Length: 285
Ligand code: GUN
Image (cartoon, rainbow, N blue to C red; front, top):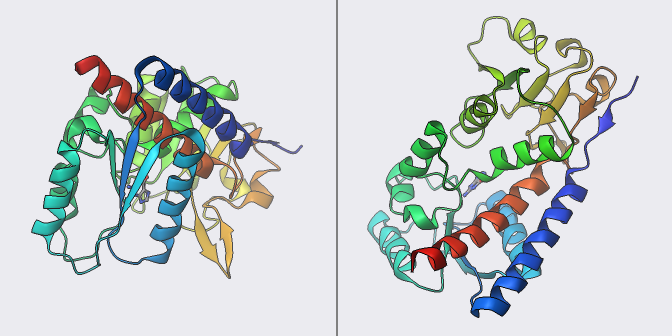
């Protein structure tokens, strides 16, 4: 048996169209358009590609995007000043600081400088706390995209055993909490998990987010499980996930491909969060 391939690209395109229509309507009603500032420090090529993808997607749906590209050796105080000015800028509703930052910058200090109400990545302590509490303001884009994919594919979550492989702040931890809030029983695995296969084989929903190419093979998957592959690894010039697709597709009931699975959903959720930031600022004014 071969798994259903979850078409993240198509689902994300649908969400982008929904966001575009909502932005159009909001503009007709209020004359306002959402604005996103994307801060890219330095010249990491992968980060530059991600930011370009995000700003292009903004243009397509009617979000005014502003790229800010300080040099890689910018002093932390200067970067904090840039963020401070964006916090005060009424045309900017969302601020994205692309990670990772150059080593000399303190990531947490920089992220905390972003106004919680403009933190469309959901990375500030306040937004993380709200998510853990079950009262989210902005949910980090990749975890939000994963839940959206599961919902739009009609995957039941309540009462299911979800296993998350990876405990990053950006994906593993937040997606685990989102699944928990939806009444899944959640196991989080990581590099020190003693018997990873025993854990992953129990998963009805398996989320792989470790950044290790093809770590999860078909024999580690329970027959009929739904497999979500968050990995984006470059191997011999080719993009591969954390899941060995060829063997996994024989065992799972549904699986996200790489590319074309979770990745496009991350961008779609950023657009949606930015629209929500504008809506929230209109409500607050
Ligand atoms: N680096 C890797 N993923 C992300 C993300 O979702 N947002 C930001 N800002 N940086 C990232």
